[in-house]
Image (cartoon, rainbow, N blue to C red; front, side):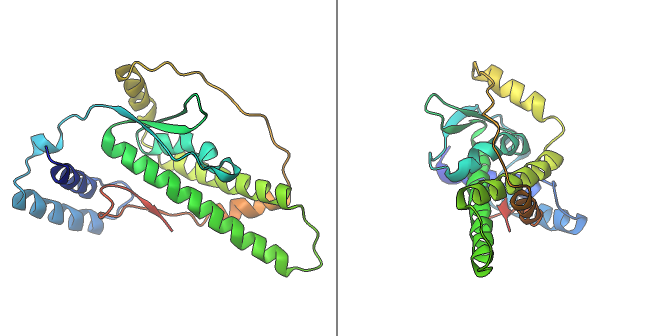
Length: 216
């Protein structure tokens, strides 16, 4: 199968996914999907063909451990399994199309949090008479923002995410060890500001990204 064919199948699968869509949107995407299926001679069996699970390593850059803090719930949300390799870099295991979605979404979320943090820092700078610790303020804001986004991801994750992850681990014969990082001292006020920023996170599904979702 050519790469162009794979991308077309991913595009049609994305159109047929009904999560987070209104009835009108579902019908519109369904009509477009049927049109593409007819044009490119795609049948149901080809769409449902099982993909083999694989592992993908994400980019190592992770300021404030944003990706580390969001990866587990991004994995649940995208039907993949997130874990850290021996170099402590976030990886995703799962079907190729789901991994593309997970990697893209994690990068998008990281940019969203960093953009929100920069805006918050600008607000603090404008308040000239205010003393604040950059490190504590930034870490607390990021922690609050990530916490709220994680809540939203958990709410939207498929109900069978645990079963899906178990199947991925079994198929790849993975041996994973659970670990928890040390607790961090946080500023409640700055964390609350981060939570408020996280409330504005929206998850929508663009067709052009081959099934990925973008965040506004």
